[in-house]
Amino acid sequence: MWWMKCIGSLLIFGGCGFLGWEKGLGLRRRIWLLREMNQSLTVFKNLTGTYRLPLNMVFMRISAQMEKPVSDFYRRLSEHFEQQEKPEATLLWQQTVEEMGDLFDAEDRELFSRLGHYIGIQDIQIQASAVEACREEIRERISMLEAERPGRERLYRVLSLTIGGFLVILFI
Image 1 (tube, rainbow, N blue to C red):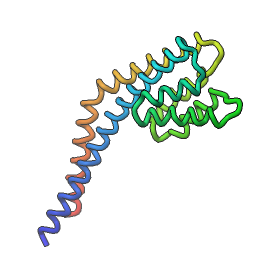
Image 2: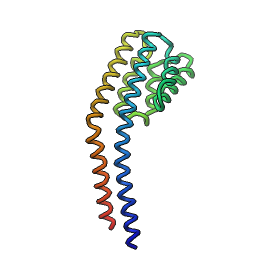
Image 3: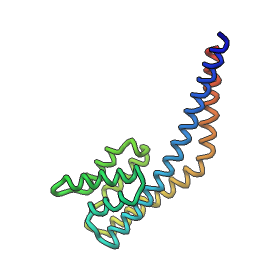
Image 4: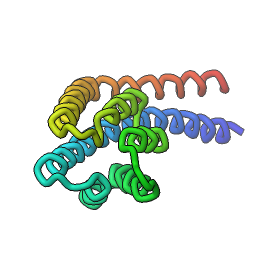
C-alpha cells in the first residue's frame, strides 16, 4: 500500500510542477505573439502607406507572411471583408479581435481593439500614426514582459512545486 502513496504523491507533485511550467510557457507565448503582431503591423503600415492597397488584399498578404495564429487573425479579417458588400473596417477589426479573443491576453485584446478605431480611415497619416503608436506600446510591453519573465517563471515553478508538496503532505 505504501507504493500507491508514493506513486500518487509523485503524480500530484509532477502535475503541480507541470502547471507552473505551463504558466511560464504561456508568458513566453504571449511575448512571441506580441512580437508577431508588431511585425504584422509593420507590414500593414508599409502596404497601406507605401503601396496603398485595398484592405482585404493587405490582410491577405499579411496572413500569407505571418505565422499562425497571427496569420489566422488576418485571414479571418480578410474573410469578413469579402463577406461584406460595403465593409466597415473599424467594426470588422473589432469583431475579429473579439472572435479571436482566446488568442490575445485581455490587455492585448484591449490594445488591438483600440487600434481598430483607426483602421480603414481615409486619412492615411492618422492611420499610420495610430499604427506606430500601437507598435510602440507593443514594444514597451515586450520589454516589460521580458524583464519580468525570469522572475515570474521562477515564481510559477516554485509556487506550483510548493503547492504540490503541500498537497502531498495533506494527502499522506
